[in-house]
Length: 254
Image (cartoon, rainbow, N blue to C red; front, side):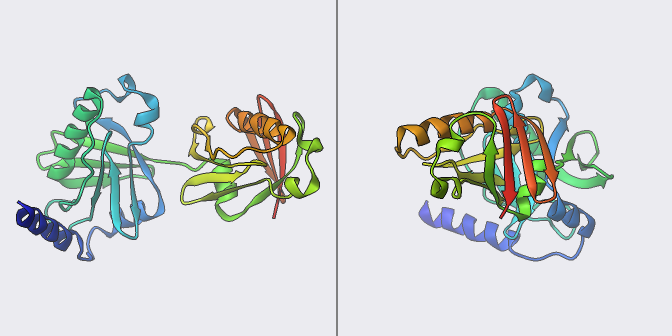
């Protein structure tokens, strides 16, 4: 059994390992942007959990094409001819029935994809006889993501909470930055991290669990609550201004 699995693994990696010269338009599209699934034959995405649907993304990095199918992630490559996608390794987690059905349907269409159409904002993949399709739409970066993509910002003022009571050395360490599609920073005592969202700016915020002074911990709690309720983002010169339900945060580029 181990020999069989090893043989399959070697074959998969030998298939997805080659470089290709064709399908350059598709490769360039995926290299420059992420695309989110917005339509699939036979399934109504609006009836599924929005937070999971928002993660149904196809993207490219140095190791190949990554596709989140609903529960599991598929890593593949683009073929030179014939079927668009090569066989590739995939995680093997179990999930909710409706998302497993979505995943099986998506995988079936991707496995049979021989045609695609790219317009300005969408990529549509078709099976051989064009009776089934997957439609992906370009994911536009939010202003916050664009601002943090190349810069780190230090918090200079907060209209609510205990910011002014913090010691200067702690204020200087309260930063916000972006890397690899994620946002992170230091909140006074703990580091925090979250994913960008085009609709709410940030998805659920997580953090480390260190303890600090009462003032610092109270500020941190207020600060993270503010970041979870962003209403508007503005960039003015070197300043990043984030307006939230819990006050206005003003940062300066470092």
